[in-house]
Image 1 (cartoon, rainbow, N blue to C red):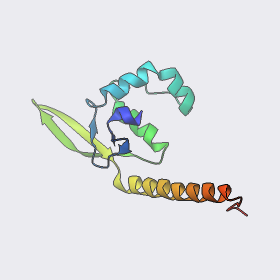
Image 2: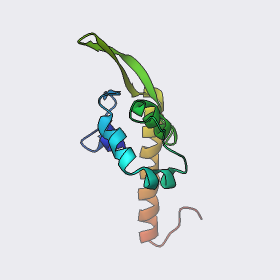
Image 3: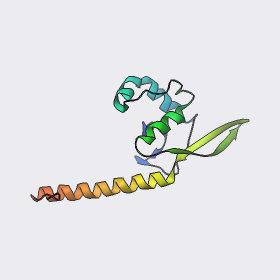
Image 4: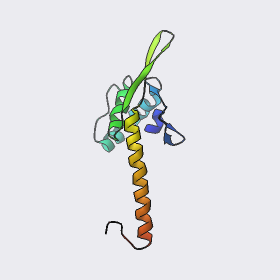
Amino acid sequence: MVFISGLLKNGEVDPSATVSQESLAGFASFCQMNQTIIEETIGNELRKDIGVRAAMQLNKLLKMAGLTLVSCGRKTNDGVQTREYRLEPRRLALMSRLASNYRVIEARSSNEQSHGRSWAA
């Protein structure tokens, strides 16, 4: 779902990516088409108004992973203002560090197990 949101670039989280209600139309559509499976997986109901509040739904899902969206400005196009959001930088940095540390620990554990040792012992 994060891939569909536009927050990823080349398979990785793009810290400079911004989203808006308009850019999240594909995300909202995907969620509506897969509502049952998503709700069963996350253990919560999706917003009934996801079509007009996709950013709020995405933010709710991101919070489950320790991330949040923050407002980063507005754009005006033909007199219509659109609010834009991006990932909150400090939380993204923290989650990136945690993921990086996990990969180091996982690699160490895998290496030690292949040599018959346990790092927990």
